[in-house]
Length: 348
Image (cartoon, rainbow, N blue to C red; front, side, top):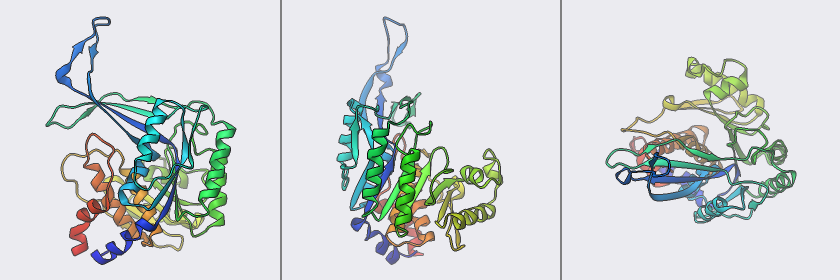
């Protein structure tokens, strides 16, 4: 990809309508000042004094942040939060992002807001140190009334969107947004619109998902292919991964993307094309949190903008390189940052 082709692809982003279905959570960062340490008189335990609190969308919201940073024209989150303080903070943070429309994101008293509370010890010039995270999740099945609203939103938004991204973030099946009923609605929407760039990623793997574009890691590819124990993904070389990805792409009749950390990204098309894009060199200390979500966002918008398999992977790899060098936060990659990271390759 040269500079002119890069400009051609990204110039289409402002005209895209992107739907994002998944488990949105609140990332709440508590920045602790160790210079203000105390000991509790009541318990005798150390007290962490918080100098600053930051709130931003997390989970599927991390993909949302990246879509906004890329300048996608309209972004439609599809999901829910609770009628609680965390839900208020989450909706405020989501609504502040450029291009985000919240008509398909609703509050419900039947659910708590999925929340990651992240204490960070801030001691400049050293990188932030994250302490034990505090999570708030839903542990019961998503109510039928909530699922029904989600299914209706999937049907409606899939009629106009150029891309539909799905992120299943919960550990316990059917307790979040991407329930079996919602997956059925997704399958119907994808079948009705073969031109729709529908791409899915799941914390628990994509077994049971309808045939859309799969984005996964090597362990998940091994597990879904039945070829290799998921505990040994690194024993697969890149050529073996390409072959497995190609087989899965033919079966699903949709592209497959496999992220390989420091080994880059492998992609396969239903027609048998495969490609491998290496990871860009590391430049100092890194934090991998959020890299996979940056990859998902960039694959989706690039494909919707007419990028080839390889071009989409090159953009996604550069975005991941930008994000891993952002410490103490779940970062995003803008078009300008991606261009800067790719510039030596674009000029070559």
